[in-house]
Image 1: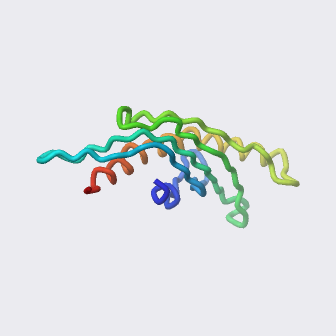
Image 2: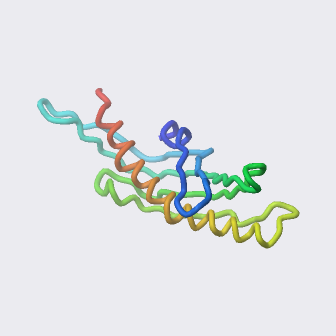
Image 3: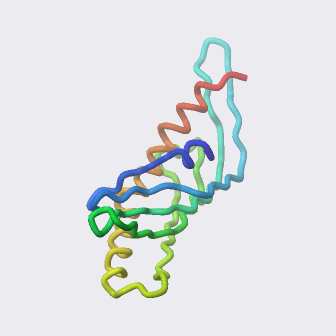
Length: 139
């Protein structure tokens, strides 16, 4: 999971080129692979995942970068509900020193884009990319 998320760059819809990335990934829980002769391996897992994220948006014709940060807690991701991980989003709304009120509007827009585009992509990455990788594993 760490490699999957730390290597990800997610373009966010409804922004002017903003991308979401992850800089801290912590996972707790259990994961096993059930292998029966003649059958495809079946992953069995129950995980809690902590993701610290960062969004960068080019501004001023690419001369500067506006940044928003936050945290996603995947409170429950299990093999029983692969396509429905339970997630909580927290956005850090603290503005840097000297930021103008207009900057708050941009940060709010980036946070909304994380909610609208970023969370569904995290869900897809878990349900498709991670589970596919688990199924390719061999004991």
